[in-house]
Length: 230
Image 1 (tube, helix red, strand yellow):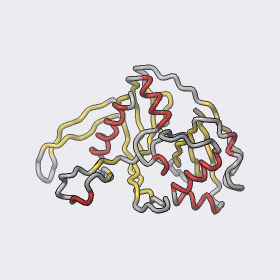
Image 2 (tube, helix red, strand yellow):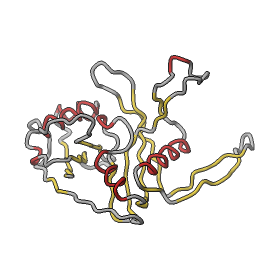
Image 3 (cartoon, helix red, strand yellow):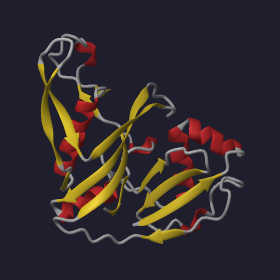
Image 4 (tube, rainbow, N blue to C red):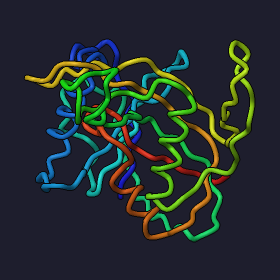
């Protein structure tokens, strides 16, 4: 895999359009990447990094060498980009820091009376932090890692009913909703950024998850799992 750090020129009209419409950014990157698309395989994952008042940075992961992103529109980058080959060799028991911008969702059951029959089978965003953490834990198990921590029992102050509160080594950061600007498709995506510590449980599954991403809406800037030393 190859990892690229793109520093965008916010004065460029194409950049401003792509930041406002994530699908347009995906299309710009795919056109510049230049590799043939492979059915049922995600060859490109990207994430706009958290804005902290400095440069606008996009992290891009590709299966093949992007050749320095020289095919991006003129003026798209502030300076030439260099990509590096990343050859991770995870092992079971390894502890890593991670960042994941995700679109936590669930499918509406056919018998859901509250949402109605018209919503059956459709995906909806998970709103509460507890739901979002449960989503992450399910995805982690399938992807060959787990998040250290536990569920704590507490009572709701307003009703005194028992409730489980997540106490895991992960920070759950809401990022609002990302607009779906794909032609012919409306709606928005719920965006959540997870940052914390994970432990590898299955090296092969974990390597596959790093390559293919986690969750849905990958063409809209979700799913890229970034890891580093804990």
